[in-house]
Amino acid sequence: MGMLAACAPPTQHYVRVETSLAQARFADADHLVEEHARHYGRKNQVLYALDRAMTLHYAGRYEESNRFLERAELLIDDLFTKSVTAEARAMFSNDLTLPYEGEDFETVLINVVSALNYALLGEWDDALVEARKVDHKLNVINDRYAKKNVYREDAFARYLSGILYEGRGELNDAFIAYRNAYDTYRVYLEQYGTPIPPTLPADLLRVTEALDLTDEHAHYRELFPAATWIRQRDFRTQAELIIVSYDGLAPVKVNEFVDAPIPDGSGGVYILRVAFPKFVPRPTGLSGADVRVVGEAGVAGSQSTFLQRTFLVEDITAIAQKDLADRIGRISAKAIARAAAKYAATRAAEHGVNQSKGDGSGAIVGLLGNLYGLASEQADTRSWRTLPGAIRMARILVPPGRYTVEIVPDGAPGATTTRDVTLAAGRKLFIAERAVGTVSAY
Image 1 (cartoon, rainbow, N blue to C red):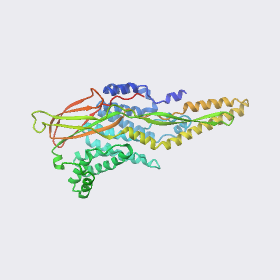
Image 2: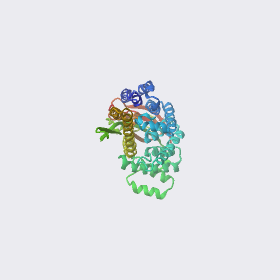
Image 3: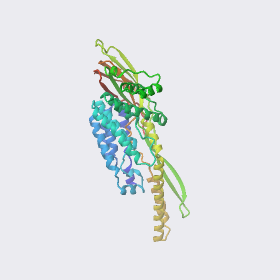
Image 4: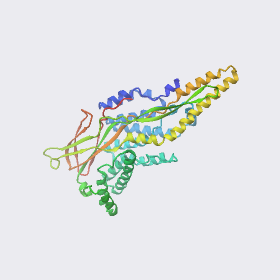
C-alpha cells in the first residue's frame, strides 16, 4: 500500500495554485509549484516541468517557461524508450507506477506554448521552429497507432504559423499554413465544435490575391462571399496587435471503476475491478474578452478607437476529452489485461498455499490478493492541469502610432489588462491576457 501511495499523482497543492491563478497572482502560483517540487516525485518530473512552464508563462517569464518546456520535452523523449521491467510491474499494480509521459495532445501543446512564449518575446524565428515541430510530433504520435487519432493536426499551431510567416513576408509559406489551418478548423468544427476563426477568410483572400493564385482566390471568394479584406500592400502599411487570451483551466482526470464479481473457483467470489480515466471539464465564468485599442490624442494616424472581441482558436478541454475517448479502447484492453493478470496471480498464490499447507489457508491468501487488486486498481489520473481550458485570440489592424490597449475578460472582475504600446508600420505585436477566471477545485 505504501508503494501505491507513493505513486499517487501530486494533487495536494493544486487548490492553492489554482486559487492563485484565478486571482491573477501568477508569481505566487509559480512559487507554490516550485515549493512543492519534491512532492511530484521521480515519476512525475515531466508534470513538474510542465506545471512550472505554465505558471512561468502566466507570470510573463517566457524565457524561463521555455527552459522548462524544453526540459519536459527531453524527459518525454527519454521515457519513450521506457523499460520493459517497468511496464511489467505496472501489470500487477497500475499505470501510476510508471513515469508520466504526458497525453499526446499535451506533448504537442508543449511546442504550441513554447511558440507563444517566443512570439511574446518577439523572437519569431524560434516561434516558427516550435510551430513546425508540431507537425513532426503529430506524425510521430500517429505512426505509433494502427488507427489514426482524431487529434492528428493542430489548427491553432497552423494558424499561428501563418501569422508568423506572413509577418516575415514569406507569403507562400503563409498561404500553405493558412490553408492547412482552414482545413483543420473544418475538422475542429466537426470534432470539437470550434468554429473557423472569423479572421481566417480575410487572411486566405489577402494572401492568395498577393500571390496571384487566381483559382485559389476565386475558390475562397466563393466559400466566403461576405468576407472583406485589404490588399497586401495596404496591409503592410498597418500595424497589427495580436492578443492571446485564456479561458479557465484544462480538465482534470478522475477514476471511473467497473466491478465484476466472478466465481473464484473455491465457492467464493472474486471482485474483478477495472479502472478507467475520465476527463472532467472545469467550466468558468469566462467566455472571452473585449479588446479596446485607443490611439493617443494628438498623435497623427492613431486618433481612433478600435474594438474587437476575442474568438476561440483552441478548445483544449474538448481536445482532451475527445483524444481520451478516441483511445479508450487501447486503455481498456490494457486495464482488462491487468485485472486478469492480478486475478491469475491471486489464484496461483492461493493454489500454492493450499498445496503447501493443506489447511485451507489459501483462501486467506485469495482474499488478501483480491483486496490488493481492488486497492491497487487506479487509472492514471495525471494530467497537465495548469494548461488553460481554451485559447482565444483577437487580431486588430491599426495605423502606426501610440496606443493604449485595454483587455477586459468576462467573468473576471479586476482582471483588466492595460498596456501602452508604440507600433510601427508592418509590425506585429503579441500580447497575452492571462486571466483564467474562477475554476472548480478537484
